[in-house]
Structures are given as C-alpha cells and as structure tokens.
Image (cartoon, rainbow, N blue to C red; front, side, top):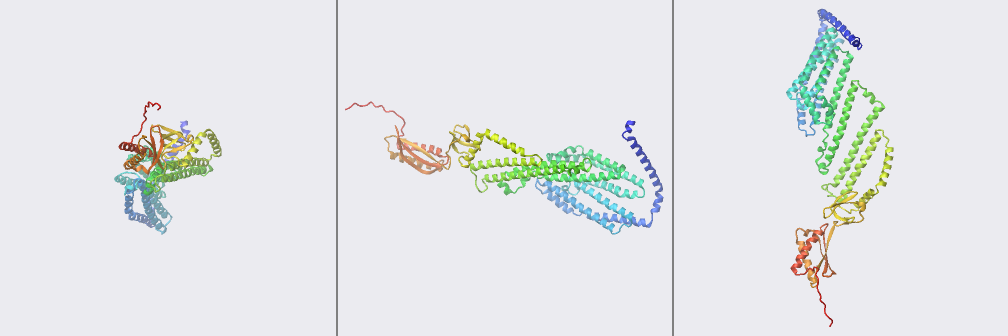
Length: 639
C-alpha cells in the first residue's frame, strides 16, 4: 500500500472524492434554491434583456439562413473546372477548389459574425451581464462555424471536387450533418449555455457540461467507427499513389491506427473538459487547432508539390519538338527535389507539432545560432542543387539543340558531335565538382585542404598516366583538325577499317574481316582517310602487245559510258574518265592507267563495277587481256 501511495494515487483518489462530494452538496443546494431564484429573476428588466439576446440569436440565424445557399452556382462551376483539368493538374486544381470553397464559406461566417458584433455595438444587449452573454454567443458562433469549415473541407456535401475524402455524396452528406450537429451542440453548449448557467448555478453548470460532453463524445465515436474503413482506404490510396512523397511516410503508418488515435484523443479531450483546469483546456484547444491547421497546410503543400513531379509534360509543344529530351530530363530531376522537399516538410511538421505541444522547444532552438546555421545550410543546399541542375539542363539543352537535325542548321558532322559530347561531359563534371565544393563549404567543411589534396592527387595521376594524357591531347587535336568522322574508312597506326567508335582517347576500327581494333590516339602518327569529300578509282588495265592502244582506249571509254548508265552505281560517278595513257610496258602486257572521280567512299564500288564493264567491253571488241604464259624458243644458228 505504501508503494502505491508513493506515486500519489491514494491522495489523488481522496482529493477527487472530496471534490465530487463538495460538488454534489453544492448541486443539491442549488436545486433546492432554484424555485426561489427563478421567481426572483422573473423581472421585466431580465425579460427584456433575454428578449434582446433572443433577438440577436434570431437575427444571426436568419442572416446565416439567407446566405447559406449563396455561391452554390460558383461551387458547381469550380467543380466543373476541376473535372476538365489535365490528368497531371487534377490534384492541384482539386486543392485550389477546396481552398476557394472554404474561403467562400469563411466569408459567409465573417459576414454573420460582423452582423452580430454590429448589433452588440449598436446596443441590442444592455448591461454588462447581457453584453457578456451576447458576446459569448457570437464567439461560440464563430468557433462552431470555423469547425464546420474544417468538416466541410473533408466532407463538402455539395460537390465531390471540393472534398478531401473520396466518399460517396450520400455518405458525405450524412457524416457532415452528424458532425455539424455535434459541433454545434458542443460549442454552443460548452461556450455559451454552460458559462451563462455558471454565473447563477456553478454546480448545475458542471452537470450540464458533463452531460453535453458525454453526448458529443458518444456521437463523435460513432462517426469515427462508421468512417474507419473509408478513411483507411483513402490513406492507403494516397500513400500508394505518392510512395516517396509527403504522404508515404505519414499516411501509410496512420492508416491502420487513425481511428484508435482519434478515439483516444477525443476521449481524453472530453475528460479534460469535465475534470481538467481551464488553463489546460485552453492549451489543448489551442494546440489542437494549430496542429490541425499545420497538418492541413502541410498536406496542401505536399499535394501541390506532388503535382509537379511530371511538369515536363506541360512544356510548350514547340519547345518539346525542338528539345525532345528536355521533358525527360526535367521529369527525372524534379521528382528528386520534390522528394527532398517532402522529407523536409515531414521534418518541419513533426518539429512544429512537438513545439506546439511543448514536448521539445523547437522554435526556441531554431532561434539559436545552431538553429539559424541549420536553416541557412538547408536553404543553401537546396539553392545550390537547383542552380546546379538548372545549369546542367541549360547546357544539355543547348547541346541537344545543336545536335538536333530539325532545328534549321542541319545534322552536325561527326567532329561537332564528338566535341559537343566532350563538352557536355566536361560541363557535367565541372558543375558536379563546383556544386559539391560549394555545398561542402556551406555545411561548414573547410575545402582548402580538399583543393590542395586534389591538386597533389591530380599531379600524381598526371605523372602516372602520361600515356592517357597523350591519348587525350592527341585525340583533341585530331578532332579539332576534323581528320576522322564516324563511319569513315581510314588507315591509322597501320590498320585499315571503318570507324565504328570515336572517343576522345581512342577510335575503334572494324576491318574487312569484321575484327574490331581499338587504336589509342597516342599510337596514331598518320591518318589516311579514304572517305573525305570525294574519291578516285585508279586502275591499270593491260592488253596484249599485238593489240592497238587506240582500240583499247576506245573500249575503255565505252566501258565508262556503260558505267554511267548503270542505275545502281552511275550516280556515284562525279567526274569524267581520265586516261593517262600507257603507264608501263610490262613483261606480258601493255598497261593503260585511268582515273574516275567518285563520291566519298564509293571509289571501291565504282572500281569493281568499272572492272566488270572493261572486261565485258574488251571481250566484245576482241581485245586480249593478257595473262602470264611462257613461249618456248628453240633458237636459230648463225647464218
């Protein structure tokens, strides 16, 4: 027993028993004195004061009734506007509609409250006690209608586009009506009836307060039970729809326990209303209101940011046509920043709630130098990230515009492609290094030793990678001199082949056998490019010694005419037939050299086709194409 009493439990029970006993005694006394008090209060002055207060109540209720349905057409137009939104803008427009509808209802509440306060100022309630009763009614009206605005934000009965919870219209109307009645009973009963009754019968006011609290508590628990499943499904749906956003870490865990937390909160609040001190009740009420406002504001900001995850799809069509990859880059980076901001939003929400409820003095700590440093670092890091990504997007978009063959300048050459790709990589590395250094500096890390260490490491790498540096420098100058294009046929470092891959350090050559050779630029002394601008087919054609040179040249011209008439190869011939004449008197043939100008890279195909035409033309003209043979000579004696 002593161990139990150590925690003050017995003392608390004894104090509670004494308080209940005193309250019961006082209640009995007030009930016994009630008839006499009612007779004494039945005076003309009190009747007139009560009538004036009743007139104030009727006036405000009539004004509210007259303007209650005002703005219905505007709400319907807003709902239609939200339904016509693009798929990505639907959630954002939904929040805009909800905010506008709440603002419209808020204007109505303010107008009715202004009418009530104006009536009080004009003297509808005379005397301090009557004025106090009238003022409490207007205050209760404002608080009750403000809470109804919160209810309407989740369960707007007029338009589904203006409600947060995706429930059917019938359920929304039913739950909104129940919660609105409970709010009115609670607020008018606890903030107007009970204080008014407490001025003449405190114990009876306490009993009325307890009865009203129990009635409202039971009604709220009933609504929570009915809304358990729909709200849980809504939370899970929002968390699944935005897994990496504000909703994922908040709504996901709360989906299965929200009803328990809500029931425990309203029960504890009801107990506090009945038994707690006024200061504690005021603190909990203010903290609850601020918490709800902060949660709604955080949800609004989180949803608005979530709608920006695919902002690239809303770029103008002309810009998308000119920079087809810009939308993809924006949609790749914006969700990352949105995710970071969402986590910061969660941290700010948790910190605000802890500060509001007095668990941790977050606001006071943020006012200290350490808190200011943290805020400055977070803002600076976000700004650095946004500037770095924006710079990269601008540079990449400019390069993309230069590489786009549909922008008016035509398709760039291989050299420009390679240099622009090199520039893009260099810009990316420069932005990454600079942003990283500035970010480290903003978080308080001294980057001086890092720069010095990077210089030493770079020097060591430069000494140890001289061949690599030579490859890069040689490759840069080869690209600047426009010596090699992709798909060119070249000879480099003694290897001939088609250029398949061209980087700043090496080039890949595919030879006629299909073998890919990777040649570092440091091994390239001379580049022979066979596909630059134009080419020549240079051929030597032999004939027997007994044939006429003139007939052979005529046959070569006839073969050239046949070559030009060939539909598959004639377009590749860009120059006349150049006959250089007899180039050599070989052992068994007379060689005639000719040259034909062709388009770049087609000299080999033209040469093969011309060789065929020459063979067929020589055969038709009876011109012998010699081949190696041996003549046996028996000799002759001297005469």
